[in-house]
Image (cartoon, rainbow, N blue to C red; front, side):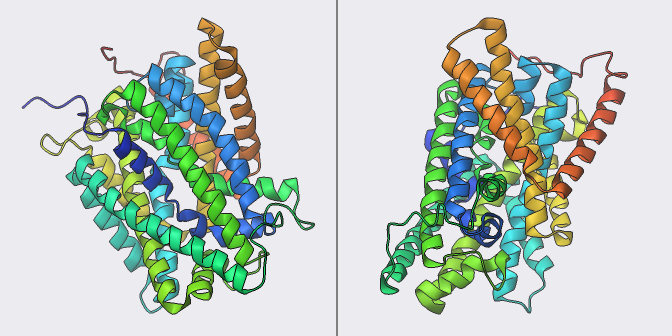
Amino acid sequence: MKQRTGLTPHLGLRSVVLFGLAYMAPLIVLGTYGIVAESTNGTVPSAYLLALVAMLFTAASYGLMAARYPVAGSAYTYVRKAIDSRVGFLVGWAVLLDYFFLPMVIWLIGAAYLNAQFPSVPTWVWVVGFILTTTVLNILGIKVAAGANFVLMAFQILVIVFFFVLSLRQVVVDGGSLLSTTPFLHEGSSLTTISAGAALAAYAFLGFDAVTTLIEETHEPRKTIPRAILLTALIGGAIFVLLAYATQLVHPGSTFDDSSSAAFEIAKTIGGTLFGAVFLAGLVVAQFASGIAAQAGASRLMYAMGRDGVLPKRVFAYLHQRLETPIFGIALVGVVGLVALTLDVSTSTSFINFGAFTAFTFVNLSVIALYVRERGPVLTRLVFPAIGAVVDIWLLTNLDGIALTLGLIWLGIGVVYLAVLTRVFRTAPPEMTFED
């Protein structure tokens, strides 16, 4: 039987947006709340607002490039087509830090909260449970994964609404004001601390870009994907800012018994033990849904790179004939997820962001490269992407030293691999061509 060489369209706008939101996991703002609060000295909403503004410029660039090149591969494909195939490979290699290891971080956060509630159960049990379940769902196919995401997102949104309302009620009961600028700015905060928090908060936005990996599985991708990108960023960003604001009102400052599970303690404070249990269930569901989406996105990126031949083709470009899924890439992401057992949430999150910000920067530069060659609207093809690139570089430099060091080491390994692949940069990396 002839091997499949392309993915089959199954998804519409709603499914793609839900995929992006599930990838972002709106409840993640609470999953990492304590860590961001410590970084910003208690101005979490400002960090998410800054990250949202930055991401909207980059989201616009992703939308333009997705409409121009409607094939799987996301930033890897866009940079390869618009700038240079070698640079595209290195961006794809860097973004593997995001796509390849992000599911690991998601499973780690979910396991941390479950371990806080059930300390007698080893963390590795939860991590392995997440990995096995999401891997099976993704191997069964994108339609199965999308269906599961719809149900899980509905429950997640319900928990978010309850948390928001209970937080505001608690503020009123405590005699506080529902309208305050303190969560955004106070004497102990500064642009430096907010920027550092935004560099971590931007992790929550990873998902608007991930929808581009489903472009070959989406109906009318040139129209659907750009709309889905902006809708995902806007909806997710609005939820992040509002939820962070309500949480900062009910728990001012940045002092917690355990910053990695701070929101769980806040949930018990505003809603008692019962809501604490419901919140924990919602957070686990959010992590589970996000893990499904992240693993699917990572496997599609590796599929695109394998199909081009820059990763071993027999492994990464293989699609199961009946299920139509890149099963080896999916399985590999699950195996890598076991690294979560050796990392903490803060380090792993900033580590992931190195690849994300690198990709974001170069997608913006890709739009500028198209403008230089072809001209077009100055605002959307030059000004907006330039602003996006500057902000992304700014956020990248605000990552901690460990993340930057590990990221540069990973990029260095990619340079060596590219040198071997291209005979010391004398030839272009292999590429698969497509009919329009």
